[in-house]
Length: 277
Image (cartoon, rainbow, N blue to C red; front, side, top):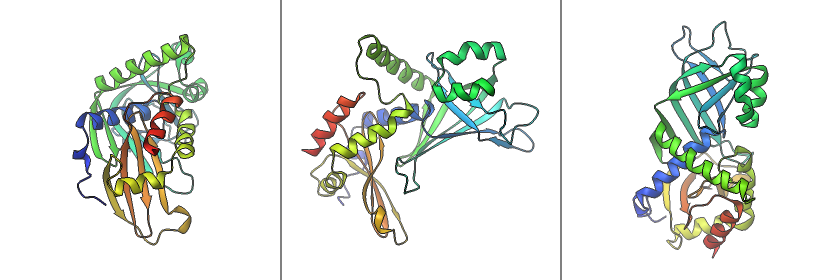
């Protein structure tokens, strides 16, 4: 592994774009959310929850009325934690997570009914028979292989407005949908990368300095199973692909950027094929 291929070898703007893209996707519904009432005594956690972002850019969380931790009062001062697993079923890897402190405003039945039509499907289904809150916050902390990155709420809102323009254009012009706003597209995006690209060859090219990218982290393992060895895709975002190479006694994570940011499936195919050349 070339020790010179670290984060500093790539443009800092790229890392910021990657962080914003990843954090926004998490808030839009990727991963599993937990809502912690950290001021309550005793503190409790609501886990039967679904989260997302409305068309207008509000962060919302729906909680099941049957959540076992739900008491007589709904929490107002909350900590929202979202963990996203890598899209590989035979390996347990938390690819990224987002954490924020905020205030929850729980909607009354009439207001909830007005908001439900613009909610993501998962959130709407749970909100219909449960509770729905609009979350206000100042910043979100993104935890991933690059470390901890704080992002202001205004930055997330700017990303939402940019993505909304792309979605509106796609809808009215009958173009391909934006893959990085809808959580249900994650698996198909990863499958596109896996079908178009030899991940091991890309990782080997990075090791040899033939592919542009950066090594981000290396951790020790204890005698990994045979079936999980090799390069695997941890995540695909607008800016590139995050890979992990699993060996018997170690796992190394790397990032390979696209030449141009992507939004749609044809974009992903174009950039992935460029990496494969």
